Length: 369
Image (cartoon, rainbow, N blue to C red):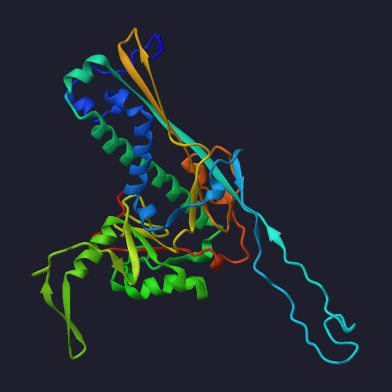
């Protein structure tokens, strides 16, 4: 492996606590082609958004060139029906023949991001830690990359629901100075109302993404057995005999729990107000993904500082079908969260099977000063 002399030492004094939380000590193993493929598989297998079907690979988004990806599409078919009879003047034109009508096409643009990080560790740390390098790298790097990818997608959703998909938002959280009650929490009634913001396309929704504190409320309710006594609901059991607390489905939707979904303060919030928690309801494949090039892991050796240096670079496209991006071609997450950078490409927001719902939870936090 060719070496280089950078004149700098990026490392720290090695000790076990430092290097078991830093993947740099596993450089040589981590940079093999087999490991790059293994890491890619780990990201896919560990991403609940991918496993739930919310994010799906789209072949059109792989191996593309440029800084934006264009996806042309046909508009929904809309034509004027004509009435036919045996006269010489039938039809809309009054000339006894059909008038030809056009089926128009439009386009949408998705953003491409290339991101990464570099790591370094000195030679001695590889001998002093005694860790399983491949397991250490795969466990930490794949988890961190998944979190970063999720943060990017959620930033994008924040921007979309700010303007382009604003009609697809249902906020049932309590207003400022109001104590949340049952109608402000995640329940079947609110989920149904959110779904039907999509009209007849509500039937396509099958995934529900929630914050862990919202999931905690769902979990607690799942351990309650209800009795109805003269119209009064009473608790007959409170978790006794329950052998599983996992909430796989709620109101017919597969549940994905992610701590990175945003919290929302009520308008004109004051200290002590209950925070709202964002939930996403979606159809499978509403977010399409691809990449211009595979995950790249490269390494070299700094012979003067006795360090192995590794870089990890990954490229991704995450596009919500029916929307279009018009901002900086190399956006940060803050840019993606800017509502002014997004527009609706389809003729109706109901054609984009993605809904944002904001709820409270009895386990939620409050606004601090």
